[in-house]
Picture 1 (cartoon, rainbow, N blue to C red):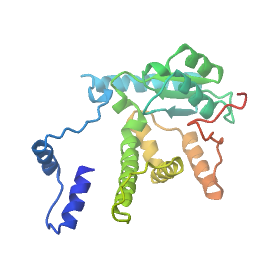
Picture 2 (picture 1 turned 90 degrees about the horizontal axis):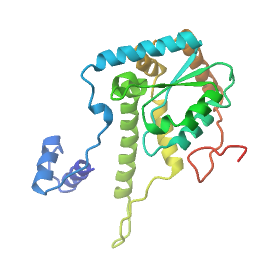
Picture 3 (picture 1 turned 180 degrees about the vertical axis):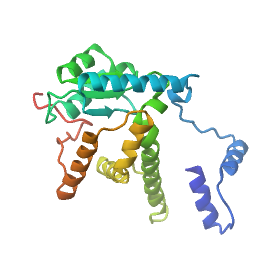
Length: 253
């Protein structure tokens, strides 16, 4: 945002040939003693033998698929606040009422403690979901989501968020009125997510699995084509979400 604001100030002041480059931003922060938080993630510190770890994990996944007769493999990569209770809700929402409950589901997710509580593992077993832990520090090369689509997805969401803030700043307001930045409402965020996700091609998702050594099967490709055809005919309807929650409320509650 500082770079965006600087660019806008330059336009308003009729300053030509100005570019809010990284070098300019570094100098600006140094001159004014600014320090901006930098995001960090565990996978930035990769093990020295990460390629071997990734290959070994891919071999374990393939063996699990073969031994259990798994046809569908999912990668869950949640970001933000999470705990064991949300993990159970996640499993219930996505897999409890699937059309073929007798077919096992293989779910790849990280070593976060909230994924591996006794309650989560018991519930996963009860609905036929096999949980497989991605090696610590290897998510950047072992999780299809991290490899192929998380970065561009977040970049598109961030761009829409920045565009929304710029529109609010540029909107006309009465003289002397105090500007107040409004946070986006849930329906707007959902539209952003839907728009960002629909920009992906099915091939991009498949390539993420290939890059991790998890070659999609013909049945997975056929299922992807079927979903695309259904979306063209009519919107797919999911469970309604309660206004006060981020997850659907169970029917028995």
